[in-house]
Image (cartoon, rainbow, N blue to C red; front, side, top):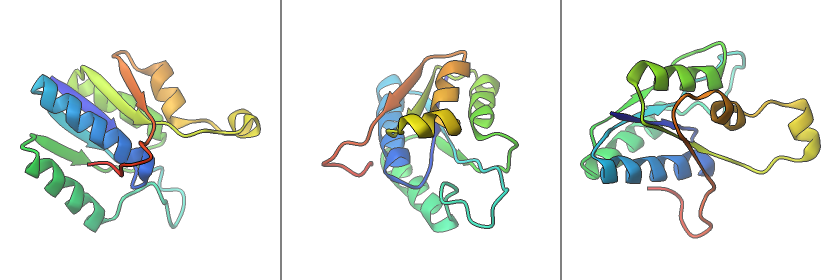
Length: 135
């Protein structure tokens, strides 16, 4: 089985990665780290650069995990995460969640919220630990 992590290069993505890695270790499962972008902006802060991805791979290898990192340009990021989970028969999706204001909730969709609602497997939503910055 596979655990899918919705990753972004920030404290929320690192929290999701840390919890996903812990679950993969505990369950003895493969880890798929999904860092997709819509590709509709010149700079997407949630799309990791090559050096960030290399660091993620190194940390996961150090933990002894079998893992892969997928970066694709997709129409919809939440849909991309759910699709990856469906294609791999994932046992779990891990997403980092952030606080949004009521106005933000009304105006903007949340990738995490949509993954939670659309996934066919369990979803673990995590918040960053104030003392830790991931794995």
